[in-house]
Length: 499
Image 1 (cartoon, rainbow, N blue to C red):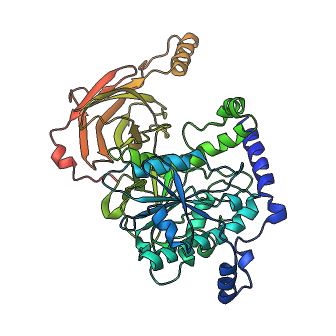
Image 2 (image 1 turned 120 degrees about the vertical axis):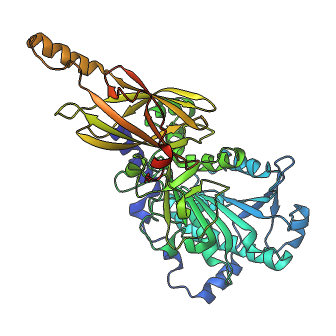
């Protein structure tokens, strides 16, 4: 069923973008034009982008018109404050989406960090066949660049105080604005929220958002799951820091089974709502980072999500971790860094990451596939019966590493209650075995020994080692709960690095 839904969605998406009819390089419109020709054409064309300055008092908007100085005063533009420009993406229905006003309100809610908020409304050029809207991104990028150059000339407003936040196609619009602006100085920051994939994936940096487009570029990738050669969001890194929440392919709470509920609520547009769930999650993660500045999500440099799920990447040394969203630490990198994290399905999205490394010793020759639960006791609160299933079978004497995430802050971890669950399947197999061979000898319960549990808290970078509370009995049996406490030799084991 899932495969059929994907096929249906992407066939619809492919028809909408009309790749066969319009597929071409996004810069084909500009091919063969000299800089002088483009400059003359720019001056002769009417500006299609509307620059709407939003009021922090009542949320009303006021249009600032390019080369009309009086509109800056009329709209109460404050040249002493930084400027954030929100750039929307492709439009299916010709309407500005609701998230735009939510983001604007979140930005304006900051008492200690006041900003001008402008919406770059290019809906007339975005409400087109997808491939045509892609070609229009260059024109809109040029118009935003013109607007910023005019602000510099009219009121000496520095482009370094500008932050462009672009969603989907708007991310690439922002990139073009950064590359088209004249002079050696760059725009201060560009944030790409799930930058669009079709007709941009695999292109050169000059044809999409890239780290060269601003002093600092960050991107959040939330819907890069590929089907039939297409993904809604771009998979490749396009920034100094590229964040891939939950691996970036798909997001929790956006399962396609919800499509039927969306169709019941929204009709045919329910399909669009389902696709938007993961794609638009990038927007809501960013808004969440503004509204919950005390619950900032940390992401970690890693090669891929599989490695991250083993807990092997929770390191913050030398810029290996950073904060997702508005309050990111702005450090330029020579090479793009891919950062991973886990989030909840709802706001606030933050979770707490822990790496667990457990040294098992088996008492049986055959590999076993145990399922565990853990209760974690912290200085602030506890979390009970967390299910743990190891990806690998347990054999011999080996240390296994995995990631645990918590949606609450338990404080400093002080004790672990560990249980090896007796699965129904194992119980049935064992019962059948003894029915057939009732005289079978040997231990009725496979045994495990846990020598120690090492833990690293990603958010605090604290390392801890836990040993059995009863060191004379380190055997673990099915359905037995065993308590582990901080080892007395903890100070020595801290020296053993957790990757």
